[in-house]
Image (cartoon, rainbow, N blue to C red; front, top):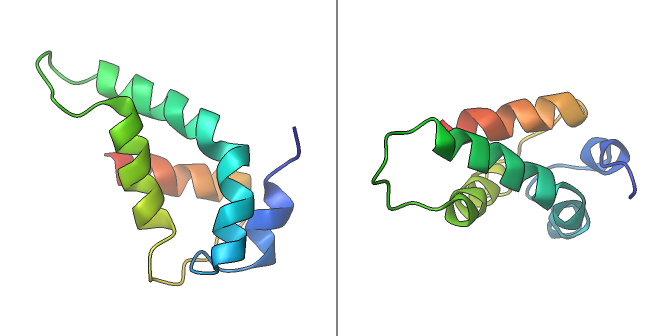
Length: 83
């Protein structure tokens, strides 16, 4: 699987081509983060991990021009958005 870092460094988050190229590379990892986050919450939550990933993706690729400094920065921003 290709590394997402070059794509993360190539443009801002509001560029649709960046988001389109990035999603397939990071989706599984975002899903793992969401599953771990949901496991920390008390039972009875109605939000599922897939929905959490989608919400985070919208925040990370929304209208605000975010710049990521590589893979670590991107996943730190994703983890923060999940919280």
